[in-house]
Length: 330
Image (cartoon, rainbow, N blue to C red; front, side):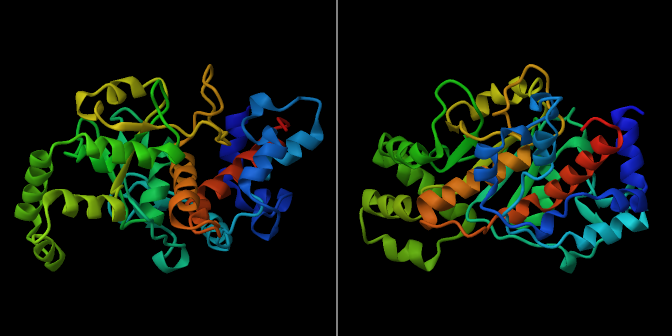
């Protein structure tokens, strides 16, 4: 039986999977995904797992131990019902419709909804297969803070309040990101900052805070805004790594600070040959960025505030590993 045949078999035949389920993610309790990855790098991809190591294979099934995840019972129940038609487009879907960004067979109140500390924009490559993208996970779980655009649509961003998360030369860490934003802002002239502020007021209407701040100088006003809201939006590119060049080199994104998550390792099951394991899936990148951002700029201790961004991802990961086990691949 091929791997993908086994995966389809495991995905559709719910009772068979549940019978062979060897790992119950929601009941485990260890330190964190980060610690698990440091201790057990085998969670990254099947190509990194030694074929003669059953222990490593078992550990590869459990990279999400210790995360504060909502119960997967609702997904298990939905899986038993099988694939259903999306009420909007009529497509056959499981859990959610990746075309309409809506839930299927699951009620909104049954899944965790997350409030993010910063807005997230995802620029999706037009040739990226919707069903393979993890960007939809973020949109469903944090609907008020995540927006997905299909390239070539790119919003008009303010350069000093937006960063692009993408690896490459010149990219900085999350730790250095905020200082880079401040430095970028200080290089602008006072007139440029005034023009930007006036444009925002014209488009949104002056708030009481804006009116009160008019008594101060432009530099004082902008300095206050910079300290309180130095980062307003984070942009992620959603595509296969072989497709990213077109979006990454678009002139509309060239002047932005790039941030790279250099120490994180992917657990994504669709590993792309020839790419390092620091190349993360979209939902992994969003999760790790927010976790680092929280620890560095919001609170000293991270208490799992964004763990549920991996709610769907962790469940699908367990399905894939179950399929591997049934196919004799692990």
